[in-house]
Amino acid sequence: MSLVQPMTIAILVATGMGVALLGSVKVALARKLQMDEARVGGLISMFAIAMIPVILSAGFLTDLVGKQPVVLGGCALMAVSLVVLGAAGTYLAAVVAVLLLSAAWAALVNVINPIAVMAFGGSETYAMNLACFYFGAGAFATPLAVRFLLQRIGLSKALLVLAALVLAIGVLGGAADFSTLTVAPAEPSATGPATRAAPGLTSLLTNPVLWLCTLALLFYGPLEAATGAWTTTYLGDKGLGESAASGLLSAFWLAFTASRLATALGARALDLPPGSETIVILVSAAGAAVALSGMVWARGRAMAVAMVIAAGVVYGPIYPTIMAVLLGHVDPSLHGRAVGLLFAIGGIGSATIPAAMGAYAKRTSVQRGFLIAVASAVALTAVAVVLTLRS
Image (cartoon, rainbow, N blue to C red; front, side, top):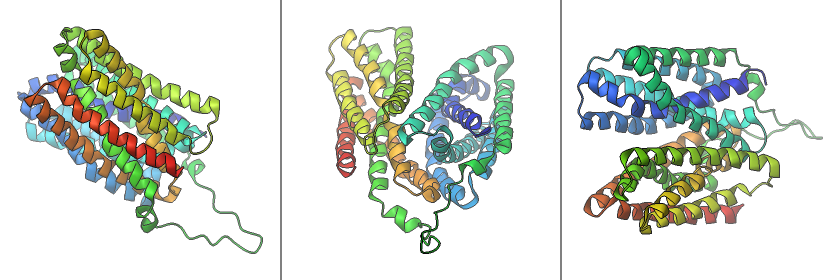
């Protein structure tokens, strides 16, 4: 599959970079534009909010015009957004750059998930967990790379370097042979040619697995968002210093990323039968409920630290395996729209539940605030039970 697999890996790393970029440059950007924390937070929130309608639209676009044009357009738009962000001299210009970045990221994420299944081969569980490992590696490496560039060449030039890298990925996408990703047409039967009609949007909207996966993402997304946002504060309340808490947050993300690679390799080595991927979601969701409960009731540092790392381990396989289940139960001609709906509706949970958790934590404590995350994990487990019973 010439160039398709390297292109897939490169786009996965780039989309990982996209989700971590604003957090990596926020201090330098705030200094340049003289922004307060409220405006910085507004930029980060804008990225997440703008993504929801864009990724849904990108799903229709992918199914309509094909994967390669969306890859090329997404890479070009991401490069433009980085150039605009680097050149921004006002808050409004930064807002425009973030909106462009969100649109580019949403388009690339929508198209790369179905591509990864075909590019990596094997089961959907193997392919999606491997894909998300590369995505996580990009997100983990971005703060380190950005810090290195900022120290040597400054914000504007650093973003130009990243834009050039994204353009190079677009060139790779233009050279890749996407015909190798085309699903073979139905074989003619003994009595004549195949007459199966291409499925339409109605078949997608009446697919119960789509809605179960959407519900699963709705309850899973807040777990990842809340743990990533409040772990350092939670550990600080347990008596850890700022440096130690930050290091343990990195350890959480390392465990999170490593568990995806382990799940991918395990799925390939064990050659799990169809339907077993829902068991992965169920076990991981139940493990998340246990780990979060441990965080809520932990009295000492050791227990708190162990539960944070355990959360990273059990979180890792959940999203990629949800995606694996979805893509395995939807016709390839509808993959773009299926992924768009999954993110657009499932993303509502990430936009609302952490806010409720923050409001509750403000009245009580961050540790008690994680009770809302426990409830979300229990709801995710219930959805996983229904998914498992259907398989």
